[in-house]
Length: 303
Image: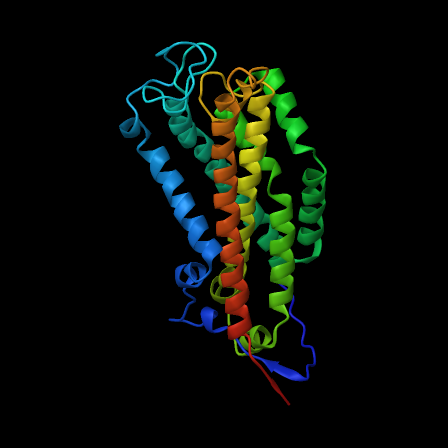
């Protein structure tokens, strides 16, 4: 890890959030924004619905429980599909599957992006060059078509979908993390810490990780929203797992039936929109927390 002393007309101080015993309050900052409150409430509601799905409906989403293309009614509050399956139970159980895909891909891409980006920025030199060339190679891969090809060749499955999307969604995150690490390494307080004998592990653990992690979480939230749209698109064109109910699979069942059963497209569409909106609003609120923390914790004094 290379550090270089550079002159400055201002003395940069360590962010308060990075000092031992200090920290920002992300939840309090996010809840100050209406969009943040809406995003957190919506995301929490979706997670709860997915977690307790069997308690919310006693109907098997794969079972035929009513007449074909029955309109929304007391018996079937969201109607039934072309063969009589209850759409409400499909939406409820689809929440669990769709969120599982989004969150799993977010974890995989987040781990890969953080590990590669921080390693490239921290070690620099040849390691940086090699890791960035690998990142560029993954970045030019067309994710949607790659997933479609893999599913077409090896068959549908949530595991395949999660692995492929997770291994192709991290390049942007890695590049952002690398840039943040490179910028942080050159700050005066970091150079001063190294000059006073701080170890590389200390700089990595107490400076780089707290500085990079909040911004990385913002990107991971946006990635999750994108994953919901990709899964919905795959399900709509018939490349989803037919043995698993997802919002995309439900939307795909509405093809050619919109005039006969408008509810088949409307309710899955609302569910997909709600999921994407929840992740995007939460990420937007988190970004305001990150920016606000930096604005208040990076003071400078003229010399």
